[in-house]
Image (tube, rainbow, N blue to C red; front, top):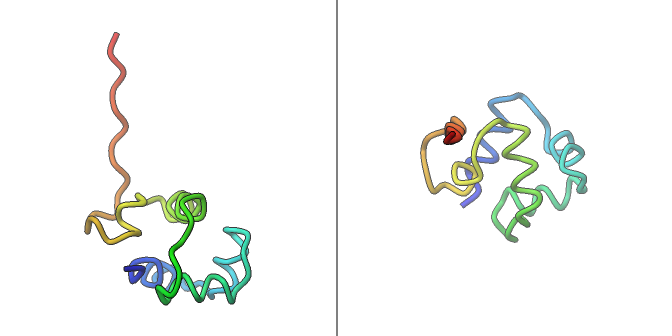
Length: 76
């Protein structure tokens, strides 16, 4: 389920401890999430999505599209 978070981390040449620090958790906890042994809390998924400029859906494997969804245009 969390294959994409590992792939993104590796694509950015980051260590687990670096990403863990960004989302304010320990490297051990991040490793558990990355291996899919425990679900990632929504607030941490949002931090990862913001950091990688992608969607939570991409992180969860619900889409193969890395880019963020376009912002909705406001109606006048």
